Length: 316
Image 1 (cartoon, one colour):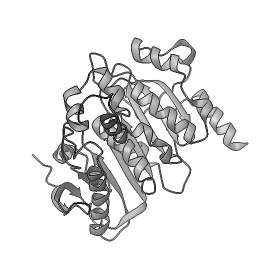
Image 2 (cartoon, one colour):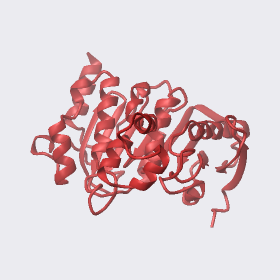
Image 3 (cartoon, rainbow, N blue to C red):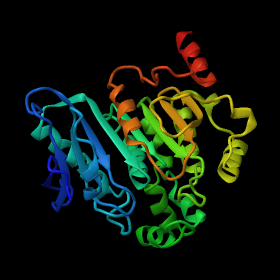
Image 4 (tube, rainbow, N blue to C red):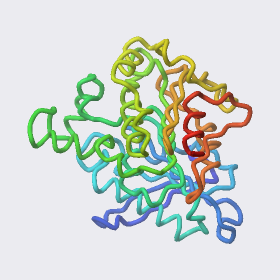
């Protein structure tokens, strides 16, 4: 049952004219006072109604677009139509509330994390901050992992390996476009046990995405080496050489095992599986503002070694 404060709205796609639904919420005075906007993206197999339990007490507007519904057909899964649907939803919110353009945020979990990374790449001028949880970044590599194989092949026209299907897998994989998201505060989060018995997305998907962003932000020295990515993904453990890169984060229920910052991008590996902490996402996003430096500080935290190195580098 949809939360009574949320309403279903229908807009016409600016790309193909089809009716597209979203859940929409505007807090009291949202038509007069400038307010932040949170764009919430549904999971791989979900739709816009999945966001019916999103908190509405925050003094933010909320819109949850359908972007062609569950991923299982070519029209969905980061297609040009799905991308435009998210942009149309942002425009709808701007047209129906007094949105603060410097505080438009994006959050997604799993398949929503996949779309969050893609939207960060395709519409970098919009977002003040992007929070992606257990995201898929490379569909071809995910196909090799053996998860959602039939759905991936239905979307892309078959398995990877032919010029036609390889083109589709690449076009729908944010890993190949994240360079365009440099400078945007992007927070990527993955549970150390995901991709094993407790989830479906290997954490290499998050670590590889972070590497692209680190390089794009000018912090190539902060990229993860392939040996560490392999060890973390396969053993579900943080390598000994990386175990001092962590934070005590009071905003997290799940223990932070590893955290690294590279310019505007942050990667967090936490004790958990295929899951998200929405309250932590909201708290982090609320500290971001377009045009201001990224804010990764958390009250009462122990800074990571890499965070301190980055701070020293910026000071220089």
